[in-house]
Length: 197
Picture (cartoon, rainbow, N blue to C red):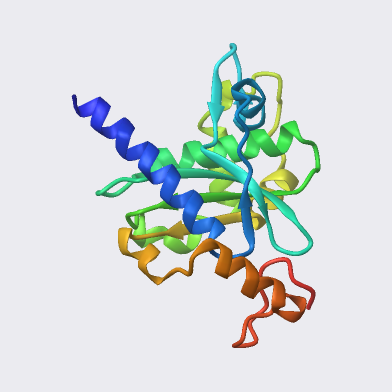
């Protein structure tokens, strides 16, 4: 039963993260009923026919940018291993798409690795994560510093709470308001990600 409870909580977390992203008014989570097609987008093949995958993918901003998201709906700290696996998966996905830009979001309900928070989105952390999983890329002699820098620049860390949805507008209202904003700037003058400077 504990595994089943964890699975249900995980699905709920993915649904909540999808709803939160869409209610920002800038993001659209892409979903298809074709499970094979969906799997091919979310999955990241690694060595010996093993596969890692993301929980969500979609587009956000203007101009539109693709993103992949990993969702951890835990009540306690996630821990470094889950995050480092996410970083290594992001590196492999970026390598697979060879230069195509997309962002990588780690969405959780509990802060983690607080003492090293400022270093979680660095090229050094990405490099460390993939080097610890060298068996994922047996054909690669050296980890690419340029790719580590590129992935680090596109990382997002998002910490939600169950109450965060109480602060959100209904999806239709959020999209209508966002469409009315010139250059996608908010009323406080802060530019949304991807908006023209």
